[in-house]
Length: 472
Ligand code: SAM
Image (cartoon, rainbow, N blue to C red; front, side, top):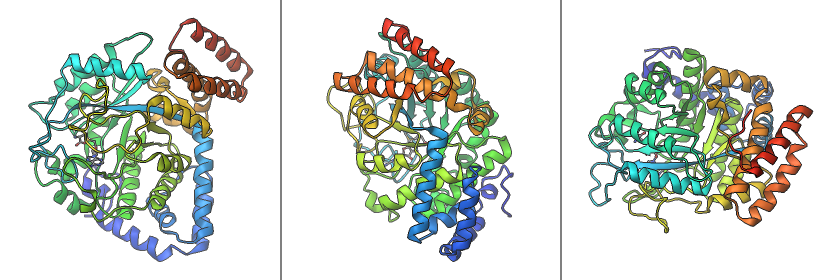
């Protein structure tokens, strides 16, 4: 079996031999400074790198070159994403699960974790609580259980979420993180108006994958790895990939992740919309120490920087699995979306106190959304609640084309300011509001086109008067 990025077979586009050869090549050339310079020169063209080139940068141990890698990642992030950070929250629908994933507390054999599945009334309560925080974008999460969480249940939940309009609130984009499924089910999700379909590979190492998923439908490596191709076939052109760092060695995962991105681009003409970089965390009956591939914060940030350089147009997501300190550092390296005010338990948002009994993992950033928004602004970012692209049909290759041409900046920056204004008007504390008004005043001046600046100013006044949901 040869490596073939265009193949539709998992073991051919995520080819173990090619990954091992890549790691050997990276090890051999990790201090080959002329080669590293050539790779960095290519990266500066902002058209990305292949998995071999990026793996050499990841392996490099020359301090000066590592600094250059970080500086370039920061610069590419600024060029493509400006200083905007998009905010979202996960919404856990059900922790019923028939799989046996060794790292996840929702695994079937865990008999002491209470099992819970939200009714539609409970979904509505969660959505109202999320809207009252100021969220506009959710990622729904559920265990895999064809009896308790069939696709019809997920579709009902999506309908409920979109239907709730509480005060000035609305959830305008629902991303979906559920187990690998059929083309037919992906089509149904597409028709329900989802944003991105997200599925983490967990590990690209097939042997390791099968050990970590000993039982249940998720045991099937090929079915899981080929899921994004079926999602594309079902009409979903924004897909989000990721690995759960800590399960296998990070070099292998990094190469696998980029090979997956190359495969999607080669076959569907559009790479992944987002890449997530979760790390395995303590949870109900899970001790991250049981997996001996933990990753230093330093290397974690390096991975983010190398992803940013290798796939400049792909959004990068960081969750509240990470501490505020790590989040601050890694955001600089190229992250474009973060979760905030998250609760990882089923029904957690409607509770006054953070409940822990049904949590999927311990949250390391416990700040409220208002606190996260405030923190982002003091760190020089514009918190954005924008959901415009997919609602304007800018998905898949249309989004990528705009992104590559730099045109996306003309929409994103004003949209970020207008959605931040909505947040300030409806949900912010006095302190956050004060700081936010200053940020908007300052940032409005950086909109290049005079006529766009004028329209934004008019719309900001209309938002104060009560109008909502303007977008470019
Ligand atoms: N059941 C779906 C699936 O199999 O993809 C939905 C995913 S689950 C609700 C979301 C993700 O949480 C998983 O893909 C996994 O990467 C991550 N996860 C599971 N256990 C974790 C842990 N202990 N620490 C951090 N992340 C974890």
